Length: 497
Image (cartoon, rainbow, N blue to C red):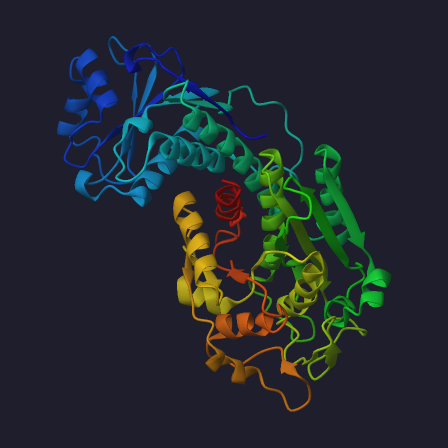
């Protein structure tokens, strides 16, 4: 369950909650709420800062207990860094680290006063929503495949309130959006974190059915192998043929807009496990390939958030769910696949499979005559090399669409960086045996992957998000992040406005 968010109007010294959160800058100056706490407690915060037991450096956190004349037994002091350099990213770091501190405390609720921090160009609604989403991300715990435990004797964070004007429609809307986006992010994270022996193509389809069952107005269609064969999806089916788990094409629809209004199409790569196929991946790190369906999880989570908000848009969400395995029937390097579009594809590497399922899904999406198609995929290691774990790669020839998505990413701190999609790169995909090769060599791998996909959108307004670096955290204990749910949901919110 997501955190419960609310608005409060308590004075910091009188708030009867297990913990409050206030801010401090690196020069030891205090935010208005922190200053009030300092005054009422006889300078407790000032003394702590002067002793260097706490500082206001960006991302730092200190907890103070049972301050005199303060009702709340805990005061969390969140470092904001240099006041003149405070921006959206610094604020996001502060609310994230303070939420991490709250998660570790034996408390079930808290009250944040970080809405009184002055973030240039950002209003209270933005600060509230950003802090709420950061808190819910920190509060998330993956428990699905652990042995059931007795209910813990100590409480854990369940609700978080923010000081803001309760009668401001914009603030109330921000709270509603935070709850919906948090639900979508959690859906995507949980799906991404599940092991591939549970989260296979059939399971993805089952989760889509739950979405449809729980939300009136949502319709679902699931295409099986026979249906995809009749449509000529030879590329998608080629990837799936080495697995004992049959593929599914999941199609969810929400018609919240006007009749006959063209929908927004979201397409997500759903490789529930990627062994690399015959072009087998190295064993080290292969366990992370359960996350190769995070693009599909991300568009499903976005769909959940959009439907929770009842956005007045028509939306179609398409997830090709496939497992890429090497058996005696697996597709091979040098195979020629015929896509739904009719284009033939020379397979040079079976580990470049995401684009092979996406190309048929993109062709299928066009039957809905969408006004925009956006795909999200953990597509290339090359994108991780280029951008690291901070920014998703964005590729499109549509400047306006690029600007809209970048703006949505900056608004939600789910940021992307645009890479070129010039025709110059297309020649790397030339083949002597088919219309196109599925890889373009070792250079510009993220871009040539997008160039491949561009051949299947027939001039539609389309953008590609490569989330290979942002979809999950590194390491054996790394979890799915739920990106790009915040960005894509914000994009749809902006369109509905």
